[in-house]
Length: 623
Image: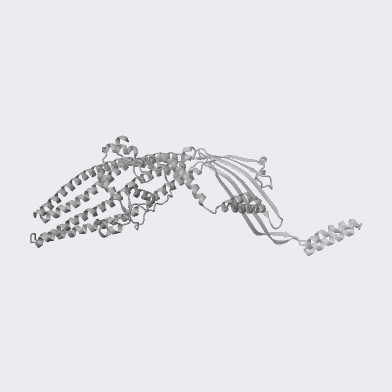
C-alpha cells in the first residue's frame, strides 16, 4: 500500500510540474494528503494520544481522579465466569425457577460492570475527552501551523483583434519591393516611383490595405501555489511566513509564459488593545481551566455514580429480602389458618376468628406476590444501570447483605461542624466555584483592555524571484522589499466595549455571590448528610429492638396457641409486626450504609478506585 501511494504520488507530481511548474510543489503536498487519506485511523490515534497525554498530565491536580482513563474501553459483557445459581429459592415461588443457572453478581462485580458499560458514565468520559480536545486546538494556535495551497485554472475567452488581410499585406509591401527591384536592376527611379505610387493608390482606393476586426479565441492556463506557516506568540504577536508562486501560460495565439515567485514574512504586534500575555492568552487560559473543571466534575460524578450503583444494588437485595420476609410471614399465617380451621371444626373457635385468619392469610399472600414483583422489576432496572440487557440472566449476591449484618454499623465519630470544615477544604466543586471567581476577575481586566484604542505595529518583507523565474531557490535578495507601519484605530465608538466592560463587572459580582451560596450549600449538604447518618443509626437501633420485641411476641403467641389461650387478633398483629420489623431493619441497615457513603462524598473524601470500588474511611483522625 505504501509503495502504491509513493508511486502514484510521484507520477502525478511529475505531470503537474511538467505542465504547470508554478504549482508543482503545492500540488505534490495536496496529492500526498489525498492519496494518504485512504484511512482515518492515523487522525484518530493522533487525537487520542494528544488528549490522553493532556489528561494524564493534568490529573495529579485533582485528588481522586482515576489513572486509567480511556474513552473506548473494552465493554465487559461476558458473564461466563460468574458463580451459578443451582437451586431455586423457595421464597420466590415460581419466579425462583427462572433464576436457576443465573450468574451471581457481587457488589464488586456490579461496580466493575457499571463503570465499564453504563451509558451515562460513558457520556461523562466523552465530555472530558471533548474538553481536552478543545484545549489541543487552543494550544495549536501557539505552534507553527503549516499550510499548502495550489490552484490551477484553464480559461477560454475571445478578444477583438484588428488585422490586415493577406492581399492587403501584399499591396502594402509591393511598392517597397518594386523600388528595391529597380535599384537592383538599374531601372530609372522616376518610372518605378510612379509605378509604386500607382500600386499604393490602387490599394487605398480598393480598401484592401485597411485593417479588419477579427474575433480571436484565446486559451490560457493560470496557476498559483503557496506554502508557509503562521503562529501566535505569547504576548499577542502574530507571525506569518509564506512562499508563493504564480504561473501564466498562453496556449493559443502568441504562446508565452509568465512566472514569478516570492518569499514573504510579516509580524504584527499589538501595543494597546490586545497587548500583553494575560490578554492574548485568554482563550488558552480558559481552555486549560475548563479542562481542570471538567476533571473535577468527572471525579465528582464517579463518586456519585459509585453511590448510585451501590444504592441500587442494596435496594434490589432489600426487595429480595422483603420477599423472603413476606414469604415467612405468609407461611406463618398459612399455618395459623390451618390451625384455626381445625379448631373451628372442633367448635373451639368462632367463624369470625376463622375468617380473620383466612383474611390474614390472603393479605399475606398478596403482600408476598407484590414483593416478588417489586424485586423482579428492580432487578431489571438494575441490569440497565449496569449496561446489560434486561434479558441477561443474573441475580445479586445475598452474601453482600449478610456481610452488612455481620459487620453491623460502621459509624464515624465525627461532629457536624468538623465534617463541614473538612468539606470546605476538600470539595472539588467548591474549588471550581472559587476558580470561577478568578475567571470573572480576569475577564474584567480583559474588558478593561478592550476599552483602549487599537495600535498594532506591523513589519513585513518580501523577496521576489528574478523576472520570469518561478523557482523558490533562486530568489533575488537584491530586490528585497520591506514595510513597517502602525495600524491605529482610535475607537471613537466604544459602546460595545463599554457594555462588555459593564457586563464583566456584573458577572464578577455574580460570581462572588455564587461562591457565597456554594459555601453555604456545601455546609448544608454536609450537615444534612451528617443528620441523615445520625438518624439512620437511631432508626437501625430502634428497628433492631423492634425485631427482638416482635420475635418474642410471636413466640409468646405460639405458646398461647398451643395452650388454647391465644386470640386471633393478637396472633395476626404479632406476625404482621414481625414481618414489618424485619423489613424496616433491613432498610435501616442499608440506609445507614448509604448515608455513610453520602457523608464521605459530601465531605469530598470518597475516593473511587479504577474498578469503581471505594476506599472505606474508618478513622477520621488519619485524614
